[in-house]
Amino acid sequence: MKTPTRSAKPAVRPSALQAESLQHTRREHASETAEDYVEAIADLSASQGEARVVDLARRLGVTHVTVNRTLARLQREGYVSVRPYRAIFLTDSGRKLAAECHHRHGIVVAFLQSLGIPEKAAEIDAEGIEHHVSPVTLAAFAKHLNR
Amino acid sequence: MKTPTRSAKPAVRPSALQAESLQHTRREHASETAEDYVEAIADLSASQGEARVVDLARRLGVTHVTVNRTLARLQREGYVSVRPYRAIFLTDSGRKLAAECHHRHGIVVAFLQSLGIPEKAAEIDAEGIEHHVSPVTLAAFAKHLNR
DNA sequence: AATAAAATGTAGCTAAGGCTACATAATGTA
DNA sequence: TACATTATGTAGCCTTAGCTACATTTTATT
Ligand SMILES: [Mn+2]
Ligand SMILES: [Mn+2]
Ligand SMILES: [Mn+2]
Ligand SMILES: [Mn+2]
Image (tube, rainbow over the protein chains, first blue to last red):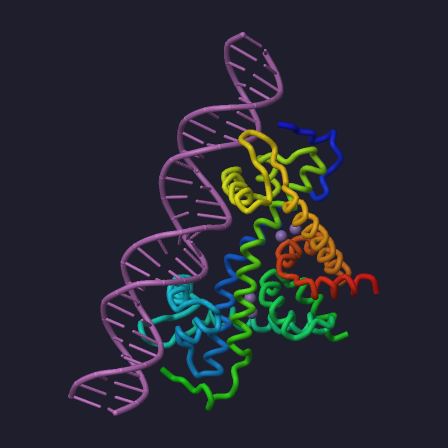
């Protein structure tokens, strides 16, 4: 098996910490879809008056089939309220999540731009980065902005 | 249907850009597992002399079953070479990817720490953020570091 | 009102990536 | 060497999240 445990020089990163970090990241991935959806629904509701399946599909870059199935899950999880052939509405919990994500998204984009990254690149990177920014890191980004 | 197209005020973010960003992020998620695996394999090979399935499982925070199936995919994709009951080896392509990821990981962690984020939090956030940092953003992080 | 078009829904497929339970191989120890 | 332990492998399950093809409902246009 090869188990140096004590004899070998310590691993670059302790396994326990990396395992913890990776599990943390996987948990974030699980909520990532929900976050992007509620944010898009809030955006569309504000700009178009209502959010429809086709609009979401276009906005999210997936087919309407994928949107439908995901909405069913989000309803099950209490973020949205969906009725057949009707517009999609956020629940209180969904609205709250959307507001948090919108706020965080804005800070991440502004922070990247403040480092000299062009808007489009900042927007693209932020879309992935945002979901892995902890409150501590978000605060550091915000602080760096009003400096 | 509700199709204001021209009449309504422009969406907060253009749908096309957001769709593009989200598709980009989904593509990054697809390579994320490969990146974390080859990095862990390189680390273990360096510190332990070889990388075994159990070590990877502990390091990655998953069961050995998950490791096994993922290794089969990574072999199919040409990143590792695996033989039953033997240690796991990186191919040239795997070693190259591992080096890139290791380099990027280090910069992201150092950058977060330079903003005052404590080491453990920096390590946790970096594990998720790293996969969404484009070359442009990585360069900006590095530049900010040697300032 | 009839018809055409668009939106929405559903059936069923794929792949990744988790898991438990169990089987087999390799290794360490009495 | 025999036996126990550890490591590895495999069968089969689940969920998420993508898709195409097709059915149904709603909406827009004659
Ligand atoms: Mn996002
Ligand atoms: Mn976002
Ligand atoms: Mn990672
Ligand atoms: Mn890493």
